[in-house]
Amino acid sequence: FNLAQNYPNPFNPTTQIAYSLEKDTRVELDVYNIQGKKVASLVSEYQKAGDYNVVWDASNVSAGIYFIKLSSLGSSDIKKCTLLK
Image (cartoon, rainbow, N blue to C red):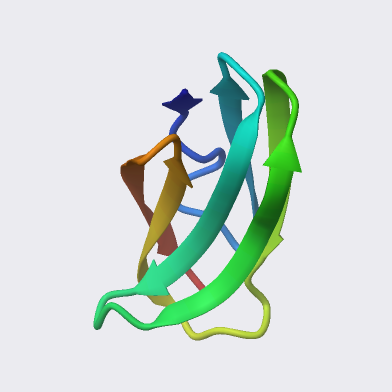
């Protein structure tokens, strides 16, 4: 799978997160704050192979640095993003 850098970054209050899957699999897409606490669960389901685009509305969290984590097929990838308010 592939997790692209979110766009725009930095952002306020929404950003788009694109990822692609090479085969059908269970996907977890979560957002964590700088302390490692999960602040959003964006995707938690079985998905078919293909390209996906998810919008994260971060209007309910404070400004700062966040980590977007995509987990699938026993692996994970993380991208750092910045929310400005």
